[in-house]
Length: 378
Image (tube, rainbow, N blue to C red; front, side, top):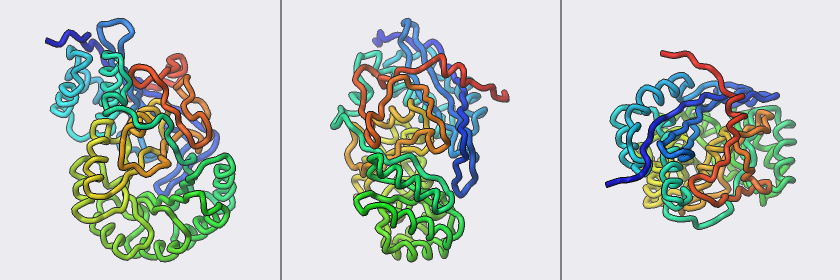
């Protein structure tokens, strides 16, 4: 019999942060980021689990804020209230029975359930993931959005001078302009600094082949998602002719998607997002890809400290990873505030995992309340 305290409530708290400069990708630009903070509380005073559901990408979200809140309040909450705090697996199965798709919503709730269970047993989340292998997690610099070559160079050089060992830039306009952007940034960086390029589903196959030829001799670590997410056959064809390693992100939302990437030979690497897959599926996807010889990079461009810390727990435990990881922040939009009180990026390019039960997330609930926004109800 499970004597663990029972879940009595599930809260969905929508919040928004706004910056002082726009961030642009091929799909649009924004100065605003929205997330939903999930808090799963139990009958034991002070015992709760927290997670962040990211409504992303900026300006063109995979899951819309109001839909996330409605799903948590009307489907997730009834499914798991009454379950013991340590019945994480049962809770995840119940949620899957009542909620189809909605991978980002499920991911944030799953991460909150990990936090809750590990707190209930007095262990860190990474203990549930198999135990930590490392305390410090190397991360890439804050992603650099599409801008003039001069502005992108200035930001890249600033990050390299600060100590970041990997720089990620966005492209996705014309092949000619994108070539200039990458060339200028690469020429401004020492070869010891890795350069990653992300096209966000922008090109046709013909254009993608062209950009790969143009960038061929520029020492690019990888080109991320040059083709639309559904074009795995195109990715496989591009990979056969490209000498630049290809990474997919948007093409992998589920375990089945990861298997299809393997079957078709559609990528050299896969971006795994704890914000999208949840700790449980992210760990499974990493293992599936490891068996196929495909390495992973962890991270998500825009997330507040709670989601960032959750990904760091997995990074501390997992093998088959290709750091530095891309655990994002709000800095590309000029936002410096965070809902975490405890700073986890101890030096530029290094996240240090805190000790303590659960995620060890010290949340600023007063700030969360100030950032809370209303959403339309269905």
